[in-house]
Image (cartoon, rainbow, N blue to C red):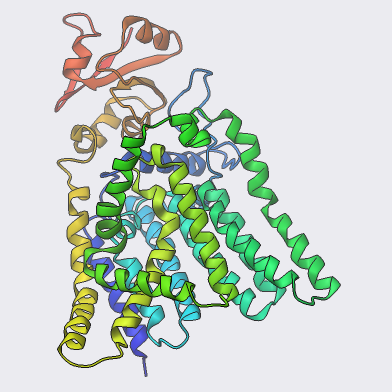
Length: 485
């Protein structure tokens, strides 16, 4: 007989598939499409090229004439590239790979919640459900984003950390560190979870531990050597000082930081991270969590989770100027803690210590929140999947195939204005250069022609400022493609 927990999760998966069906064959659009196209470009080049994971390439040619872009270690991109080699480079393959990764994350959060709430039989199912229908997770779950991969590895690393704390078996410690290493390789901010590792390790080493086990535990820290070595090598070459220096580099005014923080507390947290339908459970769970922290002595599990949460919050503060109001995926490290708070809230609401109308009302609201959360998540992300407002000139999407046919294979192009440096080249599937101003100056165009640029692709008004009168062009909606001399 199939358990109710299994049925609940199958229903969640079915609702996800129903909500995603229109997007499974739709190309990359929406909020932060620049990051998606950057990631997918690396996947495509790894799949079509030599597969060199240490030299991920984009289509934008930099000032040094190179297309190599080393930011996070492209472990997810490399794995997805192998999937493309096996099953083809269709959009459906991309979306299914992203969805499979997200389902693995949902499984991990359900195991973590079940571990932390052993006396709440449906804790795992509620965690699965609430993360699935967190609008932030729901939107990015089928989009190519390394943060998805890092979140998945981090959630499972937390699960194995809790297993290690509970049984002190070295194998769980090593699995925890290995997965944490993968998470950090995929996205540097997930280093914050190491704060929980240190708390757990310190707690164990204070107890009588055999010399052999102590050596294993300490030597296992070498598993973190890979991300350490990678970022020591690549960070000096990063062009964005805000990523490296945080508040010290952005020098964002305090009034602006306060406005950003208020936006995330008032809008991003309840609307995107929690889901309006589960706000009551989140508030109740947060209060229950604060009360639990006041009880002494604190368990090692609670200390480890608290350390990781505090580290994540400090990271958010440090990068607040870079995060701004728009970079919501920077907040991914907080998602596991938010879901656990929501689970704690539902547990409290379903076990209220009083009876009467208030109990019926609160539990009715809790049930309604669970039932409505798939709908509210779906409604919230619809504006992000608007083909008429894809986050760039929609004609690049509408005429993608025609544009690619109009430009010979391997021809270098100049295109813009594209501040992202990735979106236009992704849709053109061409290597080349982008300009960010409304029209490039003559010196820019002449320089790129000398370096091999053969075509200009731009809005007709922008192109008219560059091309001589009467220059032959091909038109695609608002875009023109012009051969360069």
